[in-house]
Length: 131
Ligand SMILES: [Zn+2]
Ligand SMILES: [Zn+2]
Image (cartoon, rainbow, N blue to C red; front, side, top):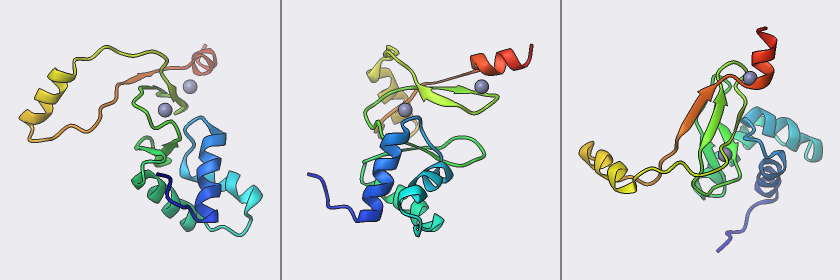
């Protein structure tokens, strides 16, 4: 099923996978430049967007730095630190009634494709820093 990716797209995709922790587009750019010094910022942005459209990465809209990208494309939830913007995967499932979500979406005229739960808070590092 894998569509053939260009070498640039392949490099960008592998970088998202290697970075692991939901990199922003500029973080991906900085990392991919190590192996492909001639790649442009615009190419990286465009490629990330294409990979998202192909379903190979998730585009997570978040924070002022722009989108973050996630190579873990299965349904999962996130925790976000309000202070430093760190974002990571929530381990474990939050039990939500699909039927109820579907109905709420339908009431808004939306056919639900996916959903996500986000927990916002302060990470340990940020809590220490404010002490
Ligand atoms: Zn934090
Ligand atoms: Zn994630």
